[in-house]
Image (tube, rainbow, N blue to C red; front, side, top):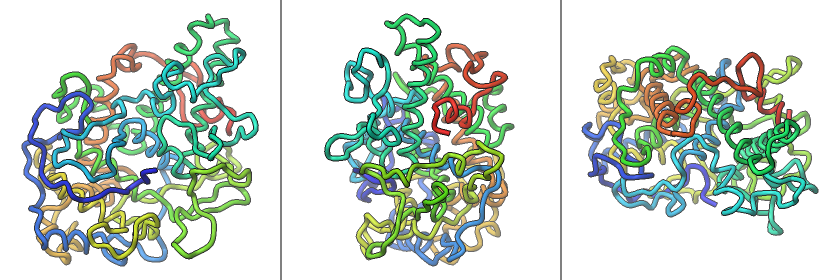
Length: 462
């Protein structure tokens, strides 16, 4: 399985095509120059910026909490990312042009990571018994886990959703949510021939509601969401021919804010705690999945979302330029290989070179926003190569969140990139509720609203 954050570093040139074709990655700011030339001095500066015990290392205490965003939303963000993008042909041993990279995941909030290509094309994802017509498969002998084959490989539309226990359990929650909707429609007398299609539409629309009305406002603020919904997008334009493209400024930089939210470990339930990674040669529990889940590791969602007043969920960490210490030594990457660093921060930064991403300052100027000052980036000056004046977009977005969003939300540059792409994808999807019925309200929640708490309760996993 391609693990999160794993890639290679040979791609070098910026894209040449201004109008991306169907299902491609592309550029949101295609006329803006790269933040730096790919030289040994720049690479050394990026390696210094992202190294262990460097600027982005918070030390043994790790990053402070963000009290406004429960920890579950960190992994919902990862689940959403897997719903939008998937390139199974490479890890990052890529061609030099982002527009040449095929996105095998439809860029829409449609849960094809859950539904696959539907019951006819991907029947292994579905229950074949007549009494469970239209339902997704759940193993009757292990209903607390994803369905698996005899070699314990999860039966999924996207193998990445079994890379850690939390995303794996979140995927299972969506499976059970769909099945619960099937039961509700069946009880209401829905025509059996229309059962799956009606349930899929309801599930997708309620999921899209969560994305637009809960997840996105937590990240960028309600004011930013309202401004784009009512005044329109300014930078994520309709340059595509058949389907939206995914901007590399979004996928490689702004949306990677979630790396700063990851805690060093999590309380999974009353008796099980796990580190995100266990260092090679060490013992202990971590979040790795990819095999049958032990009952003792089943997640208690009250630890991740506000489900029960008696239990306060863990928080995500602040959105800033520090990431948890274990992320500086990814266990599936061999150590001490400068061409293939084990630090997630170094890998993210080096990828800015391979895709020729613009600086945060250049994007701010393009947006007409006052850029961060040299004082805001004073610690970056020490690494050299002038990065304090032309800062990699990912680092800039994180520092902007720290300085202008108090570590709780993204700032104006990062927030607008993420919000415009999310809203643009919903508007471009002819089957989304925003395109088909913008005044639609959820029918499965309360008072015309629907949250992750409602989804987990309706699915019967809370």
